[in-house]
Image (cartoon, rainbow, N blue to C red; front, top):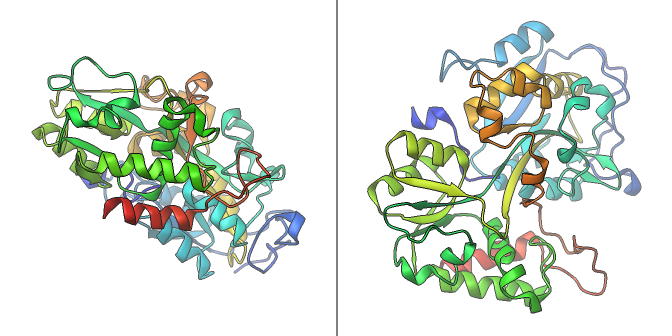
Length: 391
């Protein structure tokens, strides 16, 4: 999902019963790699690409270690590559040197379409049964009724503002788009092409004549409208953020007074005495949900499947969610959090809340909103547009 994920440290060969078919991954409908049918003895190693904070081994925080217990239980030594962006994750997965990746929605369809990941057999991941239903079979983690990963967690991209500088209290994204002129140089926004979807989401209600039904399914005309809106907003942007601690600092010092954020950032800023509040605007919001996917050329598929089940087991999923700052994917994880209010704070079990969140999904030419009479713009076009927006 991200150029930088929230992470507290940033503030502070065995027998295979059946291996994942070699190739470069895709749907079963296009003769891509087959899903694994069983899990045999671990190969003794698993190579992971992860966001910072997802595969902690105690080296950053002695209290955060779910890697060593996994190694002790399974005999699979964990080798982790921390990625800073979704683009980096996609590039690394193309090398075939990694077994699994914690991909965000702005990377998942790229990996599926390129056949770099294999379908995931959820029957081989016992804890999948306890994943919140709202995270299963979503456009960003499945294709043609087939899951391509195991959901890890989720969160919304909220609107945060300084309560002493912004009045009245905003309840719409209008405040950072059509109303941005009120805060020249003090507006902040997430630094990624996927942020175009935030503008598209606002335009769904602000300009209904555009006919936008899905903020990730934009034809050329709709994309042009979103780009125009973001170019207008650019005049009032003080800083685009990707490092969440920098956003905390900007809001504390007053360099930013309004913009997009994550709940963990709002929590951190509040803990550091910044007068801020974060809200889910009336239009809803974009959001993110990460998915553990298995490489189509995994060299250690058994250990990869063991990791998938481990990382979404209740206790471990709770540990990651609290350390990272997100809603866990496993419903039973809410019984395991140290903070009894964690799941309520992140709306973990509130499907009504998350029905208002449009999770990051990779833009592709085949319109995700079901239209067949037009070709939609893809992520490469969004990337070029983002470069143009930022000048």
